[in-house]
Image (tube, rainbow, N blue to C red; front, side, top):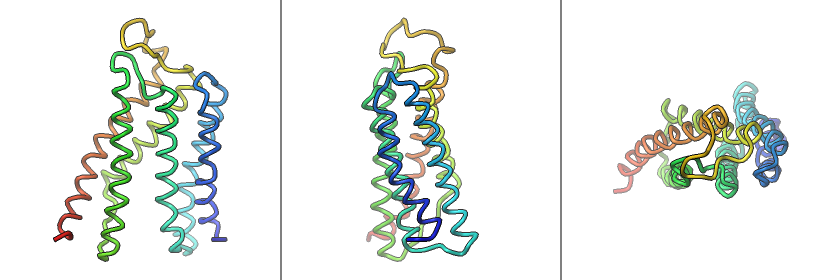
Length: 202
């Protein structure tokens, strides 16, 4: 628990409520800017704790247990808060973008349960290259949606016309496009995990 990698992992978990606080008011641009900086710091510690644990030879069972939990807590919290504050809403498509966030949340829960089952069966499922791309797009999407709140303010609430030009909301649109990309990759990688799991359920 006292090793630096584990401390960094725990700091990510404890930083999530603070991040949610800064994202709670959709019109508070300064809060979203602070939230974006905090989000980047959390993402950086996600890289550092794994790197330091391997470099120092201090990979622990506690770290292996906490690291994926910290990731899922942050992703779930950000998606839920952004959904509640209308940031998973866009012109023309309206609230349809919430489906992409829901797909990601369902996959995270399902894969966690599947990994627990396979762990009991002493089956290891390595992280594929496609899963790493999924994570990259997922982190980029949430970061862009948060940054969009700082740059553009709250997203357009209309489903029809009159939402302004792309230049007035391009960061937010990048976030939504990246979120859908992550959702598609989520379905593909989730099926890969399920296919492996089904072989050990008979």
